[in-house]
Length: 444
Figure 1: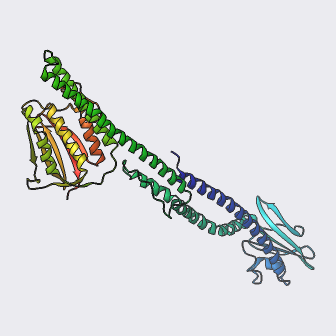
Figure 2: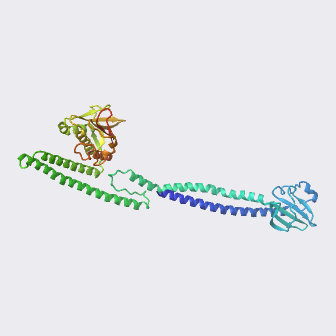
């Protein structure tokens, strides 16, 4: 994936490095040439500054205090009188021999020398310097001119990093704002004076998209509300007509056909109700959470399903697991309607798949200071390989009995996801049956 940050930093730093390298080479070359000119000037200055009364040839073997400071190991000094006799040379250097006046570079015994010759009225002065010494000194001087560039480049790279990070901060802030938004939040992003001009078109486009999504979601919710009325009413009327016809004798059969029609009609009604519930949860807008009592919801749900449990002689009850006691109200921050639908679906699912004479318990729990509840039954349970798949819509296991549509657990999972709750399924280890846990409530 292409990164604007890496692209900017790569080109800026590489461009800066290339420009700095070219500048360093140019500075080094210029400084080296200037150092060479300076050393040539030094040779000329030494030749012109030599005393006129330099002693005769016997001074060759002893140090002359008047030229001792000049004729060091870097410079070779040779002097010939007007007769062409060598009267002086630096004793630590080899004799190069007299060359014509002027400045030039020569080679002697694989060594290169820079030589300056000066013809005076009664003598000829020749000053020479090894090229290697000149090169070393020139390089040192050139490198000394580069140290500001060595400080400038790291400081500039640091500034580039800071500037790019600062310049792209609004993009990162916008990304984090969008990433932390809930799926149901379709409110427009607010523009303030801190949003750069370059980011404003993107924010405007995102707000336009959010506005169109809000309209589409509102249309979907309106359709679901209309469909709920249009689908439920005819199915309920059909069931009432079927029951009336069976009672007044206008519909006659052996009984099994009417029973199958009634069973299938009930299944269609339940399927339509679950489809509408699932669609409503998918299109549900963000609802501000309020404090609701888990205990009260549990008691209401157990009361509502008591008749259905009695038909199958199932023991349905509400229990409390320590440290939760019967005196605790178990207030949690949640969407009351969604939480009620979630709990009802789990209880209904447990009753439908628990055999006659079984047991279903709603257990209130507290773990690590956070409240939750479990729906525990002693039914057949679910094969371990299918524990994750049963949360998918319309999934029913191969050996599942009953008339379910495969939407009960899917609806519960969708509500738990929307309310940021953790829903998990596990088979009971000490007995038969299934336990569905819902946790993650903030208590009060």
